[in-house]
Length: 315
Image (cartoon, rainbow, N blue to C red):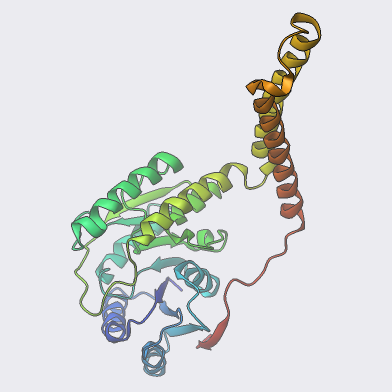
């Protein structure tokens, strides 16, 4: 199979039929073998009914229905697990991503041998204050932190070699950082393509300003995990040793001063250095214990299901 199109969605009933017809037209005109995987992330409208109707008239349509809303990352994870195409395309269900971009994205993966191609919505039709400016700040921070030189990390339109989606773990809210996850896993051939962005035709966006706050927090998380996820003691243990060393040095100085240099001076407990020493030694011990516990948890953790599937179609 040439292409798997993975589409996570939440309450996008109005756009699904039009999106399906558009994708099918592009696929058929280019003679691609394909599948369209809709992942209903706990919609409360008639999105699932629409997906069922589409699957009945088109065997290329497949569906996954979550028991409740688990988030876009979990929806992508479920879609990636089921995808069979040599190239996996992800796109949003709101018609803001253009399916006409698919053939060129496919060629960049197959012909240019890239591992991942990320779309760049250079010209956007979103609110400047609510989305465009925060998005630019977010992308700047992501570039500086991750080292991946992309202009638009959060574009839903991306193309992947099948091996990428089968070997990365998308969880939490990490869908924004799939290129970073891919790079950390060793898939370094990452490209970018300017794609057409369209104004939303139906409904309203499901994401608010809080996604940028969450995005920056996730960026810190992925920075930490990429460097210390497999060795937390290297960070917390080092901080613990430094803090404990500072405290011990203060305590040693106070002891020498009181015993030999100035025995008739103030009591040790009357000196601020005593409390600095005590505080830093306690903090150092806590950092060290945190690193030790992190190592124990890392070695004893078991994989747990992050979402529950209520229903599947055509798998």
